[in-house]
Amino acid sequence: NFHEVAFADVERDPLGVVQDNYGALSLPGIETALPKISAYVSTLTDYEKNRFAELDESTKQRLRNEWGGYYQRWGYEIE
Image (cartoon, rainbow, N blue to C red; front, side, top):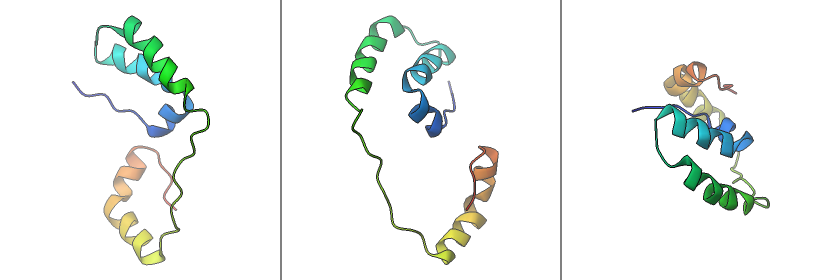
């Protein structure tokens, strides 16, 4: 089975995405897993995403050229 998930959706609604994943993949045991996942997610309230240095323009252009189709396919903005 295959099910695509956007990272932005996981950030916005992690428990909803987990429930969607279980349903889309016909996985059993959501009733058992969800309380444990919910407890874990509740520990992430102070989590801060990694911050990375700005990419130089030549690297950005290379990414646009080589990965631009994927960005467009999945609706991500190309800077």
